[in-house]
Each structure stands twice: as structure tokens, then as C-alpha cells.
Length: 381
Image 1 (tube, rainbow, N blue to C red):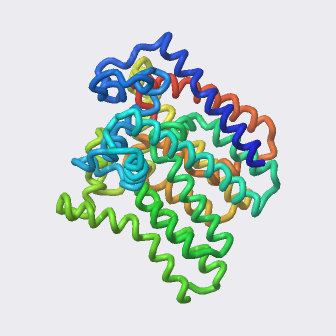
Image 2 (image 1 turned 30 degrees about the vertical axis):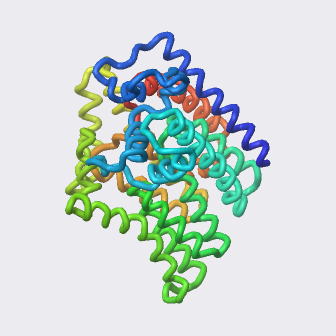
Image 3 (image 1 turned 180 degrees about the vertical axis):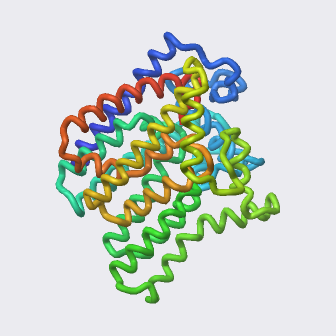
């Protein structure tokens, strides 16, 4: 099965070059957004890196991760440290880490690819604990067909986040609490929503051990180590342990960083956008994608509950979902939803063949379109 998964991944990965080639022929890079392109930061052409088929994978957030990995933090604290630290450590093995160097670029892709390959294997093994082969396989297929799955191939932290969350759950399921807690700690150093793993682990511990008041429950405290360490770093460098939250507001995404916004308020805001903004504006379509993702994920989380997907997985996914959407915007949600693996398990468990075919066609079509425009400087998630 491992060979089958790797073959599936290779086909998917090669397919992702198709929309980039098409975009190069028909779409110009978005005017005024050149700063979102990796090529914009190259002092001079860097051989293969500057080629359109490769540079696109480092656009947008990839630029920040590469900069942090080589030069450390300035004020870009909104990006959690583990992914950049990993890039820095591995790059240093091959020499001094230099931002946007060919060595750094290819090392970052090696890390992302490794994390994603292992993630798919772990996802398969995790699902196999409760379901048959075909459910595990189609869960992976549906994840690869998700419209923003190309972020798993980009220089983003998605593949690392997915791997650590799956490892944490797998170690829990096999009663290795120390390893599960270590992975949880690393997860909270990868992205803010990583803290969602902690309630899920506590639930599993109480379910398995019948009580939280046991000596080995102390392992669970390791889950806080990542975010507490980053809070300390923020305090030392900027005098504010929660500076990374405030830094989220610097991305001009209308995200509230000082209060929780009720979801109905956000839905109303999106409906107002869709009804008043000119559909000829690209951002109108992004807003449509974001609220459509919100609806899809909400439905699939409900389906996951009805299909009796393991409750700790659902709890983790729901919290990962609620944290970003409670900030007054669904911005980035099409990407954030990518790591919510229980929704893909739920989809694989759906018996209606028409729904699965419709999802596959729509997902594949949107994957082509979104990757094409993403490669040309259009923000999609």
C-alpha cells in the first residue's frame, strides 16, 4: 500500500505543474502584487529557482518562511517558528543558510515533500485502526482533490502541521503518551491552531484511562511547550508574550486580534460583500470561495459526527475550524480547512456515489484554477 500511496502522490504532484504551465501562457503576474513573488526577492536569476515552474511554490507566505529561516524574525511574528527552524537546521547541514538561495529552496521542498509523504502513510495507518482499506485510500484521494491541496506542495507549514497532528493521534491510539505529547508540543510551535490538539488529547486520555488524575497525565503538559516557548520568545523580543496574535492584524486581512467576532456577524458581512461588490473584482470570487468553504466544512463536520468518526478527531477539527473563523473573517479558510482530515474521512464514508463524483469534479476543477491564479500573484487562501 505504501507504494500505491507514493505512486498516487507522484501523479498528483506531476499534475500540479499543468495549471502553472497554462497560467504562464495566458495570465500575467498581478500588477502591484510583485512583492508576493519569490522572483521579486532574487538579487539575480538563480538558475532553476527563477523558472516559473519552480518559483511559484515559494510565493506569498513561502517568502516569509524562507526569510525567517535565514535571517530570523523582524516583526513577522504571525508565522510560528517550527517550520522555519526546521528549514534553518537542515539547510545549515549543507552550508550557511542564505535566504532564497538554491540550496535553501531545494531543502525546503525536500522537507515539505518528506512531511507530506509520511503524513499520507500515517493518515492511512490511523484510519485503518477503525475502517477498511478503501475508506483510508479514498480519504487520501479526497484530500488530494481538495481545491487548495497544492499548498501541501508549496513552501508552507501545512505538510508539517498535518504530519505532527497525525503522529500525535497515532501515538495516542497506540498508548504512547509521551511521544503523543511531544508531537503535540511541536504542533503548537507550528501554528496557533495547534493548541486544538490539547483538548483532543485530554479527551482521549480520560476515555482510555478513566481519569485525568494519573501520573502519566503529566506528559500532556508537554503539549503546551511549543506555544509557551514562542510566547516567551515574543516577550523577550517585543515585550509582549502575545505579540504574535497582534501581528496577525498586520496582514491586512480584516482579522480581529483583540476580540471574538460571532460567526453570524461574519456570515452577514460576507453576504453583504457578495450582494454589493462587483463580481468583476477578483476579491468577490475569493469571498465566494471562502464562504463556500465555510459551508462545506460545517456540513462535513456534521457528517463526520453522524458517521461516528472518532470524537477526538472531530473535536480537534472543530477547534481548528472555530479559531480562525472567530476573528471576523473567513480569509485563509480554504487553506486552513486543508488539514482538517476528519472531513475527508467523513466524505469517504458517504455512500452516495453522486456526491463523491461531484466533489471530485468540482475539487479538481477548482484546484486547476486556484493554483493557476496563485502562481500569478492572486491571493486565494
